[in-house]
Image 1 (cartoon, rainbow, N blue to C red):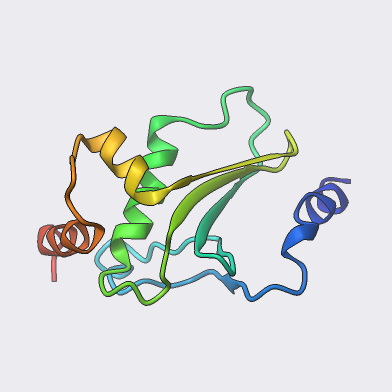
Image 2 (cartoon, rainbow, N blue to C red):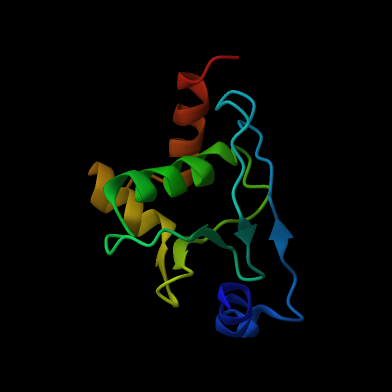
Length: 124
């Protein structure tokens, strides 16, 4: 039933260009991290199937930001990040630069600069 519901809830993505399980430039440095999907309009979505009532937490947002920052040279043109709570049949997405500003207090720092700094912090 969950599979059928998830397919129905994401029907707006049918026929669109999707990148499933994208591997980022910094994925190896992050222990093999990859995301679930990047939509045609640049939204990096992570699917959550937990049955707890608290689906979105700080850790989840930082995970999404880490994926977006791991795309060092913007190969996937990520514009936003989002979570799809499969059991709750809801999805939410935010502009990546706004999320980074609010979570990290980065002010007007450009995403390209943050990606560069992030890559410098990771082991090579």
